[in-house]
Image 1 (cartoon, one colour):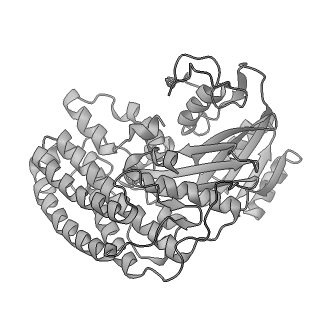
Image 2 (cartoon, each protein chain N blue to C red):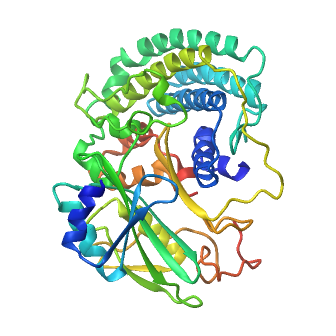
Image 3 (cartoon, rainbow over the protein chains, first blue to last red):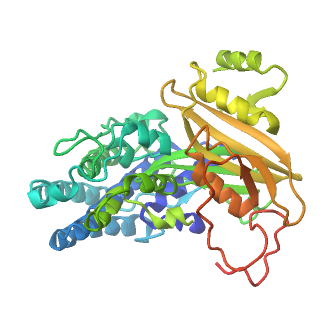
Length: 312
Length: 156
């Protein structure tokens, strides 16, 4: 699990979840409902943290350094919550085959409510500082336009594809870990300031996704069912029976898939990852053709690519 | 989906083998390597399948065989399939030739580049030559083959 965390440190829990789902499918392990909701809460918290980091990087790329510091302040709240629940701010190593490593920490639910309320207020501030600011809008509107057809053709997924009009979100299309128990909206690009699929839409979609995740978090923490948080404890000689499984989750950057093959031995035959950034990066030669040098960092930042995922 | 697959079995009699993928309800179609491109193109173009998205492609080596899987999805028809073929694993550091599916699914570019570098598969029929060679260090061979020797020169 420690190695899986390194796949993409910003959304480490999404990688842990994909790996756990695949192994649980081969071993036919039923995950307790409580553990599923705890996993969902942590993954959504990870999504908020990752999107806030995206906004901070974009603010830096557009020259809004002060805003970037404001955003990182809120991201600290998210990292503090990770620390409270998992004991670590990064690389949490918290999910286990059949559940999670520990039950909900005392005070965690109250802290989630406080944090979601505060971040919701701060989002309005970012809106005023960035979205209502013409200097910011002009750097992104009509820049790096990605059509829905190109997005499908190159295999883009996640917020970057949804900004181009795609409605595909694995949390809705193939709900896992209890996402079907909660109601949430999937924002898509509308071309409010420029055209559908431009850099501004990619920012708006992620801003809206933070809002949706905050709502989802408030509902989820209030409806954590009673029960076990772990189906069984793995021993050092734990082996996975012969078989294979393929799991997909909606990570903050898009579709993260994991193909696990076992021959029943102590080591897996193959663990293969489909990371969203390694597919999303394929669009760059098309998008960056003819772009001026000063727009390059802004367009690159608007796609929120993770080099850790590409060069895994 | 089973009824749809009857169409495939009718179009390609005696070359298609259908079963469940692992424990899941997802269906797996096993085809011969020589039929792969023809069947892949048919799955992409046939109106009732329209597999327009290659979401993943994976290789593993087991029992002396390379097994290549294509995880397909149709956005328009809202269904999924796994297409799979196997070839005999080459000996030593010999490269193996395999037909590229980038002409059918351009999304395959990223997966094939990675498979070429890590498993030593030379994809034929590609419109563009791979521009990505992962910088894994100065050593001979292909690190994800079971025959690969993990010596001291391999430094990650």
